[in-house]
Amino acid sequence: MSRRRRPRPGRHLPPHDAAPLALALDPRLHETLTADGFTLAPTLRPYLRQDGRVSVRLVWRCRAQTGDTVAITATHVVRVEGRAEP
Image (cartoon, rainbow, N blue to C red; front, side, top):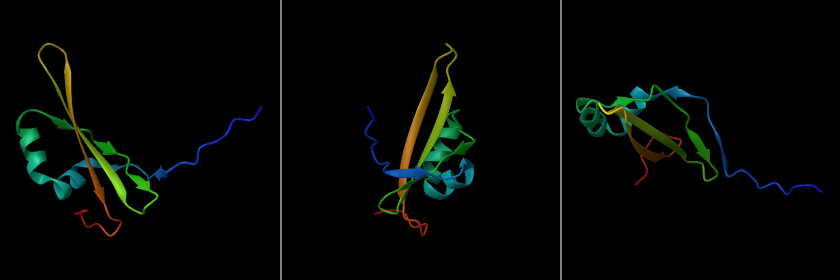
């Protein structure tokens, strides 16, 4: 019996450095989190959606003294031309 395949809604793009995109998309958030001890994940994988926009997920992590890891994620959707979505 063959399995029915679901069409993929988009595709991943090649990995990119996260720091320049974090500064371009949300510099205040990046500065605030890094000042509080969070570190930005070094790379990210943009996702090309079917509507032509690209979603970018930025992840900052901080390890507490108890050994727990706190993560904050910010997802931005941008047009391919590079302008932020309203």
